[in-house]
Length: 509
Ligand code: FES
Image (cartoon, rainbow, N blue to C red; front, side, top):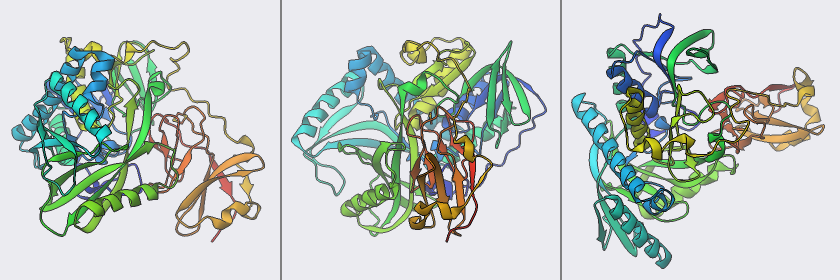
C-alpha cells in the first residue's frame, strides 16, 4: 500500500506498492523540471522526455499521493461541466475542441496501455446520464443537444441497465475506465527508461526566476529552462487561486451480493450528483460510487458524507460489503474550463495545469499533450481556449511563493497547561477542533492514545483559518484548498509551509 493525502484508504492505494524508483540524479540542470507526481506530471514528463527534452520530475511525497490516488478514474467525454455551459461561456468551436481533446485523451490512454501492455484493466464503456424529474428532463434535453453539437455520439434511451428508475436518459459512446495507479507507474517507468529522473519526498519550497528557473527542494537546488507546475493547484500566491474553487468528493467501493456489476459509467443529475462504475482489481470486481461533493473546509463532519453516500449505495445496489471509503479533492474553475499554459503574472518559462473539475484523468492527459506541443512550438487548438491568462491579471498578484502567515505568536514556543483548556473535555480520541484560548485560536487534535497535537489554525498560504475534516483527519483550508495533517505538515498545495506548532503541556485522556 502507498501513502495518500488523507486518513482514509482508496481502492487503488490499497492494491499497489511503492514505486520502484531507478533514477540516477547527479545532474542539477535540466531542460524541463516538472513538479507533481500525479497523472498530469508523470504524463507530461514522459511525453517531454520522449520528445527529446532532459526532464526532472519532483514529487513532494510519493507518486499517486494526491488526487490520482483518490480519483474514481472515469475516462469520459461527457464531462462534469456541461457542454451547455462550455458553449455558453466559450462558444461552439471551443466546446467541439474540448470534446475532441477529451476523446483524444481516452485514445491516448488506450494506446499507451496497448503499446506498453499495461495491466490496468483498461476497458471501453458507454456513459449514461439520467434524469429523475421534470426539471432534470429539461436540463438533460439541453445537455444532449449541446453535447451532440460538440460532436459527441449521443442517443436517447428509455431505460438504464441499472436498478435505478429514471424519467429520461442519454447514452454516449466512446468512454472508458481503468485503474489509475498501475497506469501511472508504467508511464513513470517508461519515463525513467528514456533517461528521465524522478525524485520522491522532495517538496519544492522556493522558485526563483533568473536566467533559468531555479527550484529549491530541501537542500537541493535544480535549474531548468522551463518549469511545469503539475501540483493540482500551483504553490504560492497566484491569480488562479481566486479562479479555482476547491471541493471534496467522496467515494465508496463495494462488493455486491450478486455478481452483476454495472459495466458502464453512470451519472445522475442530483445536486451534488452521483457517479457510478465498476472495476476489476486483482481479480475481484468492485462497484465504485462517488458523490456528496462540497466545498473544501465547509463541512466539518465529513464522516456524515460517507454515511450518506453509503446509504445511497445500499438503497440502490445489493451490497455485500463496503470495502473502501475515501475522499479526494478537485478544483472547479470559475468559468468551466481548466487553466493550462503559462502561469499568470510570471515569466514565460513557468507553466501550470489546474482547474480540472472532476475530470482529472481526462484533463491531466489533455494538459500533458497540450504542454508537450507548447514546448515543442507546435500549434494546438486548445492553447488559446485554455490559456490561464484568459483572465485579466489583478495588480499585485505576482507574489509567487510568498508566505506571511500571521500566527498566534504569543503561544509559539510556550507550553499551555491542558487544564486551562476546558474545551478539550469533550474531544474524543481521533477528533480535532479549533478552540479559542485567551482570544487566540488553536487547532487541536487528540490522537487514539490521548496525546494532543496542537497547531495554529492560520493557514500559511494566505492566513485563512483551517477547518477540521473528520473523515480524513486533516486540517483543510476553505479558501484555496491547502490541507495539513494532524501535526500541521502540508498535504496539498497551494501551501508549502507547515502550520505553526503550538504546545499544550499535558496528555488529556
Ligand atoms: Fe489559501 Fe489557505 S489555502 S489561505
